Length: 289
Image 1 (spheres, helix red, strand yellow):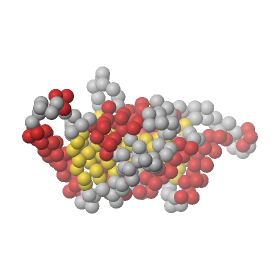
Image 2 (tube, rainbow, N blue to C red; image 1 turned 120 degrees about the vertical axis):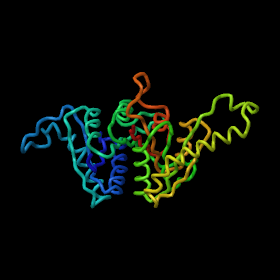
Image 3 (tube, rainbow, N blue to C red; image 1 turned 90 degrees about the vertical axis):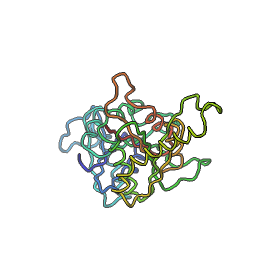
Image 4 (tube, rainbow, N blue to C red; image 1 turned 120 degrees about the horizontal axis):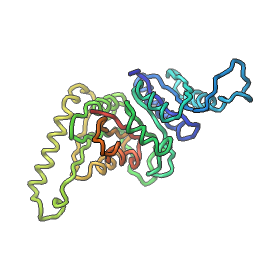
């Protein structure tokens, strides 16, 4: 897999915002930034074709304008342009097989708005071979939101190995030189919410067990990334709610998805889907075994 960050461009302000985020991430990771624009009607280019008769003029302009603007902010970043004669979904999924990170911009219509390419972006997230970042056009906090903290959040399910997710999370925290907030949400049975149904000691044991499991999962990575300060957080509530609330004031949320899911199961889990649609910060969905 190449040390490349790819961003999908469609000429909108939203995709340009995603390109700026991708450029910053590529800078941190010492990676190449790949600007990708897919246009099914891309025509073979004839030498010396004037702009007024060039069928590819607008497609070229989208990528050229983005490149020019990004170069002003990142003069030392290696940027490559790519026009592909394909539908966007196929082009992005093909690119995801060869790069470290794929970045998509959001339409920014609402918290539940679809991302770049509309609803098909969720198909890209569910199928991409590499991590996919979803970046809203306005990633700043709302006026009534809590102040942002200099940290990144990773949601850890503990239902199985998630080494690819944790490697991405620790690498990201290290590259940004910020703490890593590892959150695990554990739902309790409905009876647990009846005051007299579960003794406090039972709830304490559930919490203690979850904390031990989370600590065990993080320990090897803490030893490898000794410079990353880790905040371990166990919440006895819906995992989806736990990660979204933890990311409410963070710079970035990272969540995992299983590469291989049951044939009848949704292609994207509830936690990843909730994070993608409701987290106010950029979200990276990382495929793992």
